[in-house]
Image 1 (cartoon, rainbow, N blue to C red):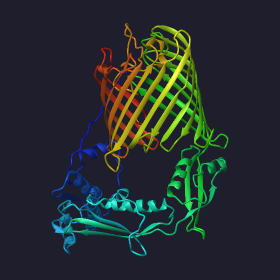
Image 2: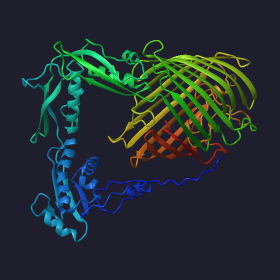
Image 3: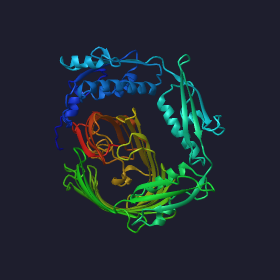
Amino acid sequence: MVALTLVLVAVGSGAALAADDSPSFMDRVRGLFGQTKSEPVVDATPYKVTIDVVDASRSLRRSITGASGLQSLRRSPPSGSAGLLRRARSDFDLLTAALYSEGYYAGQIAITVAGVPVESDGALAAIEAARAAGPVPVTVTVTPGPIFTFGTVQLLDADKEKPIADVPTLRELGIIPGRTAQSTAILAAESRITSFYRDRGYAFAKIVDKDVVADHARRIVDVSFFVATGRPTTFGAVTVAGTDRLKKSFVEDRVRIIPGEMFSQKRLADTRRSLLKYDAISGVRIVEGDKPDAAGRVPVDIEITERKPRFVGFGAKYSTSDGASINAFWGHRNLFGGAESLRLDGQVSWYGDAPTSVPDANPLGYRFSATFTKPGILTTADDLVMQAAVLREVTDAYIREAVTFQGTIRRTISDQLQVEGGIDLETSMVQDSYGTNDYNIVGVPLSVTYDNTDNQLDPSSGIRATATVEPFAYLGDAGAGPAMVKGQIAAYHALDEDKRYILAGRIAAGSIFGTELLYVPPQRRFYVGGGGTLRGFDYQSQSPRNERGDIIGGLSYVAASAEARIKITDTIGVVPFVDVGAASAESSPDFSDLGVGVGLGLRYYTAVGPVRLDVAVPVANKGEDQAGYGVYLSLGQAF
């Protein structure tokens, strides 16, 4: 086992409303990763700001402090006394907007410089006098007052100023009487109103005006939107431009806009998504006509931006339990003009220690594969995916040399849901602690995938779930007829709008039934341990063993993970996490032997995704020969 020594700094922050020019602990941590220095300001006027939010919750104090320009710019002193006065006065609008966004419409804000109110005539002179003694003291006092709730909400015809008959429900608008009257909800409702009418054929619907009236006596906010829907419209002619290597017919077949049908904003969005899912297309610009023609038709122009057809890349991964690997790939995104893709991958891996099942085996592994995808094999919703591979896989439980082929048809049901089925072929020679066996395997995998996450490599919201059933048969002494079922679900939730605090969780399980454990080829069994399932534990170590202590794998498994992904800066984050899991010799998981690993990770966020460095230790059900920790380095989040 390779020994690594890492020094990690655990950091924490507390809520503080007073700030000065000395760097905070968190600022020092940020400085470790390189903080750019700004150009010196002429006649700089340093100041010390203190923000006092009276009788407020912690979240409101954070909102007020975060909105203050005096606070956020305190390390960039303004030029001259007049510059500081302008900055202080501008906080009135910023803090008022912050109060409105939380439903406080009767708040009071007082800002003083050197003890003098900023709105008074003597404020500038007070700053001049205070500069000689050091940073100018600035005090911001915010009294939020009572919280307001929504009262009457109505949509009025902009011309007649009378209620409109066909309107979205208040729940659809996100403005419900009795709930906190957040100004952000009002702004969001404007967008929802125009979308509501544009989805119903009114392509030029807009909000002409709105009245937001705060009744201080009743502490309610009444909102009136004045809407001009315009005349009903239909889609007119659709033109496609921008195609070069890509066939124009390929794009036209996937446009979800039909001339003569009722205009719908959703159709435009669906068209954009349906085209952007292809790697050959990097951008889609949809432009509607400025006005309808005499028949109420709105022309639509679609402009495509193509990606460069060829791409190449490489990567690397390392962990103390799984070993190291490097890989390189080359691909083509548009072989024949229909977004057909070909990708060639090569990977070389080094397991490290000699596998315990075959101690004299070479720890070198490799995998060379070719993947071809043909969109629209049956309909525009069906893709053909074929992959062939030659590989040598080295693990503690077995050594496998194999040639494999998978051919599947993948159908897209919706933007979030896909189903696929096909054939899985393998011919292999496998060595384990019982000897060497040859296998010729035929499988029929069927799977369902649901994914509404917002990012593939670094999701902050949504759910990602897969479920697979694969009956398989093989020739030889092992028998035939088992079936494998496995599934996984992961969920992600950001605790704040900036997505700096994200909770992530994953649960996975699987089972093989229809035969006994040793009748299943080693490479088809379940294993738990290592970076993919149970960090902190040796690779495959939390799996069933034979009487000699060799890992043999199981007929079932269960694993779960929980992470708190916390961004310290825009590029640096920390991730405390816990993993649990184990594989079992029976088809039903045995929860009595669950291993538990805990750890801390570092993330470096790049344009292509986060670089992950995790360090974990086993804390429950660890074996005597278990390493003291595991280190994992790769691109992308753990799940």
